[in-house]
Length: 179
Picture 1 (cartoon, rainbow, N blue to C red):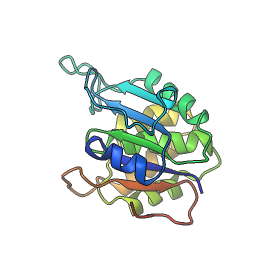
Picture 2 (tube, helix red, strand yellow):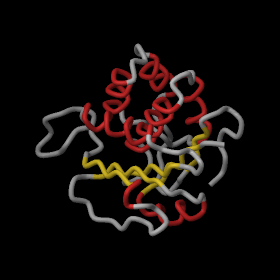
Picture 3 (cartoon, rainbow, N blue to C red):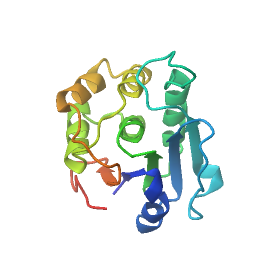
Picture 4 (cartoon, rainbow, N blue to C red):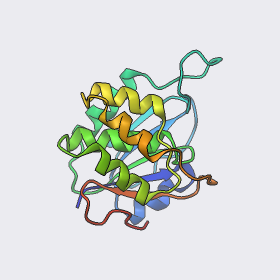
């Protein structure tokens, strides 16, 4: 079954090995250093430099842009889906859950937005997808506001220390699969 593993930066190596991931999407602040796990192919690792903010023009920080979302969509469409994709940001709470939703809808456009987002909430009571990424993703993927509305319907996630990876299945079976 196809699924996306969402992780904080501190646990990417563990999650990549545990779930046998060979592809990784990194959403981190521009210039943030980290080591790509050896099991991840350099050719199938995309790093996008952006901060976890919801609006542009914030003192040198980089807000998510349409170009970032287009790169997420293109990367996801190149995913062979024989193994899970690993998506991470600093804490695994905002940018990476938003990117996981975008990637899921890019490869499975017939998914119901509300069902997918409810599976996200079931898998992670902490996820609070970045609203700017969600809004841009909704537009780029021509979701007609459905993704935005679905994410709003689940509200903000519970507070966390950002050390709680999770699995987002692309189909309803196995929702909330443990990590």
